[in-house]
Image 1 (tube, rainbow, N blue to C red):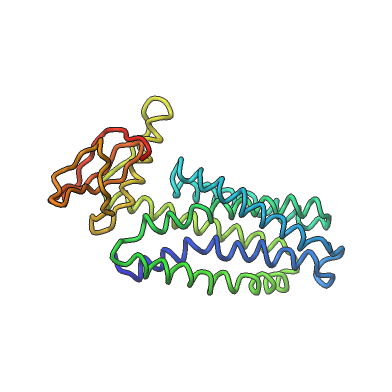
Image 2: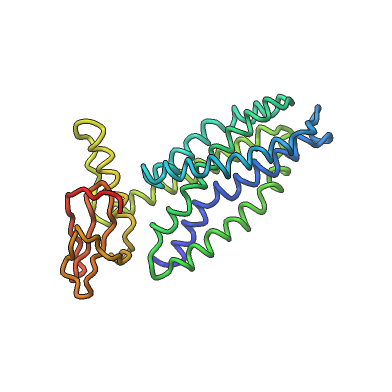
Length: 276
């Protein structure tokens, strides 16, 4: 996979976070407080926005970071994208009620959505970028998304308002962002699973087998496109697996492990390892 393809995927998946962040935290409070754009301007709109940002940084990001660790970054981001598609129009309908409680409820729902997506995005970028071009892809992709999609989002939202005469069009714009990012993420996850040759073992008895299979697929997606993974010292109770340097290549989790021996051959070990 070329660096250009990886950068394009990173730009696409960073779009919901970068553009959504500026629409919700910059354009929405400006719109709600502007007497030229709304019938009843809300002077406390920026105070509500500040309170939501502090709540997001101190509570939502740690919470959804924990969720992404317990599930996977992909699952957390896909859930946030789906929630954004479902909540975009109801949230903007609340914002247009021109009252502080409705603004808090509508904007707060969207802040929860982008916080869930943004909390899982960094780990997704690290685990799904080939090691030989990881710095280049993340540095270019993430910042290009902020410069092009995020930087132009407030301007584009204002143009949409001028063209359509309704702020609900910005809700449609945000919903389309979520749908596009969710679709690209689903495509990339399935493509990564096909390339790694590891398939989910969902459909077994109980909920454990489904989570087990998804975790196995996700650990495989952490491998580079050239079959390499990060090299970590093996835990003492795991021993070593024939590496002449006394190291084994692994991603430990409560799921089948994807290991790499000294001959660069992938092997699966159906065992469970606790946190270490």
